[in-house]
Image 1 (cartoon, helix red, strand yellow):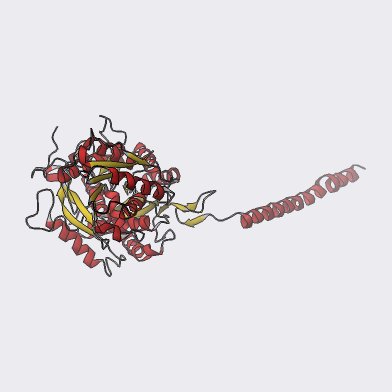
Image 2 (cartoon, rainbow, N blue to C red):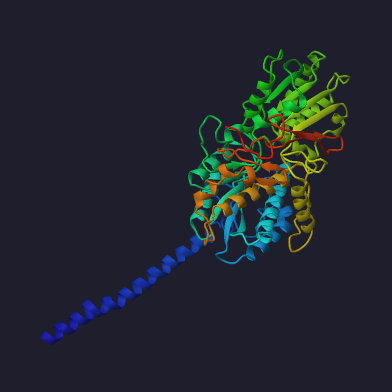
Length: 513
């Protein structure tokens, strides 16, 4: 009886469940695997390339790329192949990374040209740093950071850059930062909060600079281009603008670039008998909107001014500038000659196929360029720049037609973007190498930004856009400002160099207290 009990216990209580449990577990595993497989198949793959993704609710590929991924821009492919070749040639542990932050997924033609030229200049400076270093270390790897066409995905991209700064990629600086917009300002503020040094190539807004109100809201930010205020001062010293002869047309409500340009222009013509004329563009200022109608009406008011008025100060972005120039071409007072003066956004008009070039027959459009290829080629070259530095860049450009440097794609220097991006990268390399202790191959992250106050005097960077001498806030002191005129052929004709201080800096290039 006792033996029968144990047999029953073994068969009914232990053995049967032991046979059932594996079967149940196997069934559960198969079901879970099937569910996971269905989810994997049905879930949309939102990756674009290593480090680059399409965020939920967006079709733009944003993030940071260290490969030859072109962000859907065929025009960048040749250049990206050259960059990828250079990056892959660097030995592990011998380099640090610098990221170029630009709207790589932009769709409007003008901005795509801007991105191409910025990337070309940045890469040429990278190649120069790696192959003409004379033993200086570290080498420089270039990454591409895309914050979206309108900068709306800046948080994701900045977060990714912060990760790269902590990891083996050893990100040590971010350059580029092309347009002075609210999203750009937010990105710069967050980058510098993470201790990442930032070098602005073509940002000019006063409120995207340190030291404007005695504070430094962006610690570690350096800039290559003058502020709007300095550009306006240089323009005033060149054009001799007076209140009774000028009318201001401005973007309302504006963005960081247009607002600070408006304020700078307003100071130049304080006491003007004419009320400034506003226009309201679309939130995306690369779009046409209905501002062309407003400009047609403003041209009537332009013709209503006294005949002594011959200057129009324009504080707006390039799309609206083109619309305004086209409207002025059809103005009623064709017997009167006017000059439109504006900031560096005027450089975009050289590649704008929608510009009415007939409008330029009795209308002069002049602007403060960030750089120009003819600025330092005339003899004698003024203090504040060097023909040798221009020649060095031209030599790189000549090499860029084929390997090992290029090909880098079609080159245009007239908008100044390639030149100013080249100088911004050279400043980044200068800061990185000056901050690298002996015996190390990389500097501490925050030490790079601590180099900016010393970039002056004999430690200045001799840029192709002119000397880069930074004040204690990281702003260029008395930087050369080329005044450029748009020709009827759509070219950018160099007029002359102007200076915020009214004269070029001395040989010492030391900002005053």
